[in-house]
Image (cartoon, rainbow, N blue to C red; front, side, top):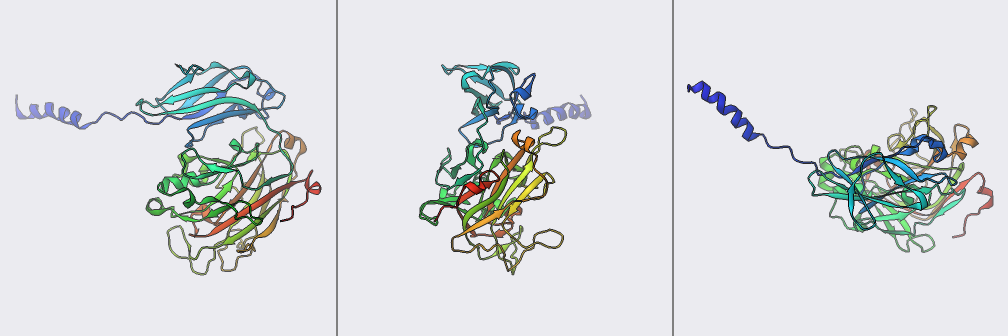
Length: 416
């Protein structure tokens, strides 16, 4: 064998030894669930409600609940799942035995049955549990009050979560604490951006504190140096938190009343140094809190679902009503950073009233069919979504009230 022939034979062997086998996937998520119905409108307010995208969360068991009309009853329905690539899906029986689930198989949702599923990763090392059920849409209330006294640690024991009204997603207020955990996993529960303050309210009850926090070395690496404390209704998709935090924040819940005003007791302590996204100091700027109420059309003219996220929560063309704490704006509508905040929130408790200003008529038929969604949002730094603000800014909130057309004249603000 000549020398050139030798190298022709050994090069493929050398390359083969350098090429490592592709690692097996460790992900094990249900990404979406679809119910196949001939007449979706018999059960749902919108045809697209038969498909549910499932966010990635840290829940030990994530509950997937399809909400149907109050008078509807659902029995055996062909059901399909979209799961992580190369993962396996199993249905868990009452005796805990597991059988592979085939897409299109019938699932019996009668009598409020709750079905258990487990997704196993390709490498067989990881798994995640889910439940699947169908529930009736809860009635909305035209007047609501939120005292922020029903809170607890999340299943991981790392940060706090708050109970919300039944029409909220998962019946919980959402916040950015799960995203902060990715950057500061060693933080203790009371070191997170959104925390409870027992006895801290204007009447001595518990209130909620939103604080702008430093995200540490990891935050610097991904150019997200601070995390504004937040509270909102919607969904926070943790899988997208570091790639696009604004897109990961999905806002709003269908609502069947026309909101007219948001009231809350507030106080605020701005941090000392306002910084830009790159960490540079912005002289002459005082941090400000944010609180807003948004009412928007959640379906377009073609019947497609509309979901507002953090990118367009205040600018979406689908917004029909908006109320917000006052701020300075430039002539072009952009935010003006200033040393003279006009929101009026100080270190002393005060009650604020935020009226909703409507830019389009609300159609009563669309309203009744859950064609509008409501957002209530707050942040300790009003530019926090763009990672601008002052570390140490603290926004305290308590005794929030939502008023609507039908109930506003029937309710009076409680005396504090």
